[in-house]
Image (cartoon, rainbow, N blue to C red; front, side, top):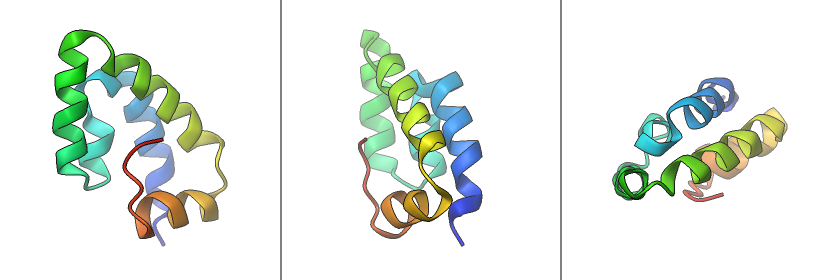
Length: 75
């Protein structure tokens, strides 16, 4: 449970990372707002790309443990 969010979150992070959509998708509202503000400055897209790659390269179990259950908001 929770691993089903890995692929959508990774794709959202890569494609719409500057808007923080992947943060909102994972339930991190505050981090999503910060990401959105960073996206307006141009930095948010880079962070989103990096996070998307990290999400997609983790195993399903690692992703669920780190981002779903332990609620790690950044990287």
